[in-house]
Length: 110
Image 1 (cartoon, rainbow, N blue to C red):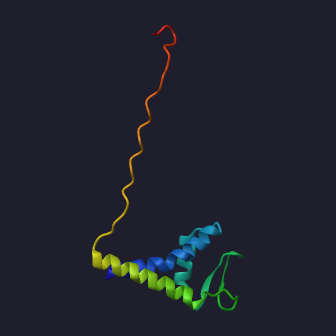
Image 2 (tube, helix red, strand yellow):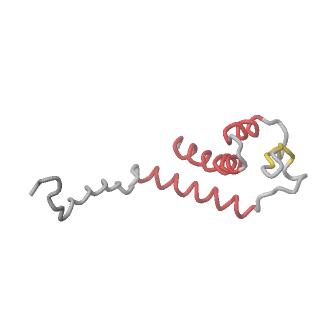
Image 3 (tube, one colour):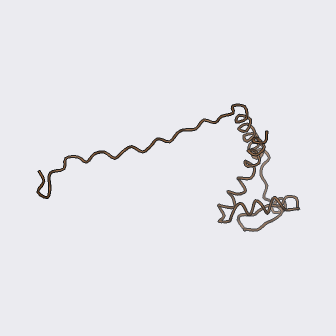
């Protein structure tokens, strides 16, 4: 269960970190400041690079988007917990360089 909870928490935190990173700011610092804030609706306005009351400034997520993100995270967490394994593509090793072709003997070599 802990693995599922961690997956959901990470899924909720990543968008904040990515938005901050896109604004050229360390996302981990922004996330920590938001998590430790005592104010309701406290968040980061990436456009103006300030912390604000998100509702008062009109920055809100549509409920459907947030709900979909949570449902997807829960679905993936559930799948990981029930299968107890993940399947991934194994990267193919790079092909060796082809042999040099048709070199005539230069520098006195025949």
